[in-house]
Length: 395
Image 1: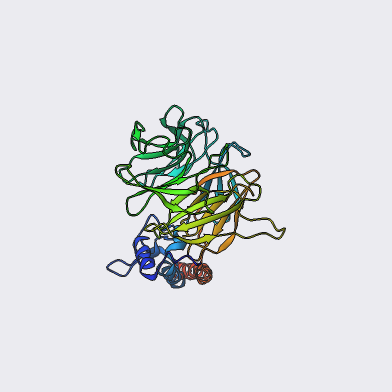
Image 2: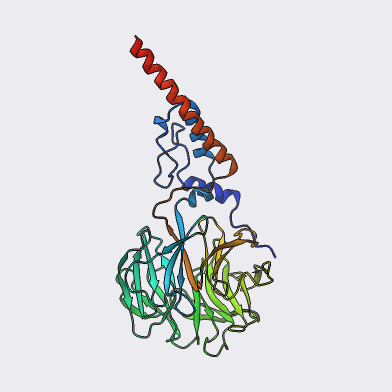
């Protein structure tokens, strides 16, 4: 089954407008801090360069501009992993090194970028702490929250601005003040779910939680529960009841549907790794994303964990069984490629962060041609400028 398109033309137009690439009242492209191609067009040298630059600014898709300067960071857990948070180039997948600097990260699980423009990521460490880091540099900022036996798994910021953490050892979801990190309460009753996995707030405001198998016994789980997003009241204990689901990470996509990474049967040597997509209104299974097998006959997606949509609209999935990150087309659900690889990458979660020192764009072919045209225009303009200067000197 094909995943329905995430972007339609109306939405593309909206994103295009939000990107700052629209004309002002005089027909000129306004300056936007998000547009790193803008180079003060009034000072362009030569009409060819100016024309090419203007065309680029007026035709570059929003998806391309959203890829400017982004990297993907992945938490690699201690079990059969690196116990580090690692950074990869957001366009090429090349390994760039360790992301976090300081703080004493231990067995990292979730990583979450705060979407309030604060340039901060939150890392759930295996020593019952939630640590904060600069989202661009990875510099340690401090301990945000700490709680006995928290054993933190997934996390989200709720509609109320508070921080929700999967307390795996306690079988519940702990809620912390989103500004101070102070413990508020347990959002759902403890031990209602034997082993809470991924969770998210839906576009309807309700709270969806994956009931995962117990890693010690490989039994239990296989459902997604639905809660009232304000009170934590259980609304449906079998909102999703999929016989081939063993939920791990869970997110709500741009289309409002629920995406879940699944390893079924959990802990089995022959388990099948997929991403399963469900209707957020009915819980109906809509699609199964499968990466297939490689040239050696091995599954490309094995023991999947962290999942997330990138700024390009595509879906990225960490494959812990292969030490890689696999990329699916966000519109069709088809496999694009194995995006990144690293030895023993035990990726429990992933997110995209600003790049430290890159401002390149994955341009369409026509834009590359226009850039070349602009480059050719600059030497011509410089030659004309030198000729005019010589004439003035002779006068």
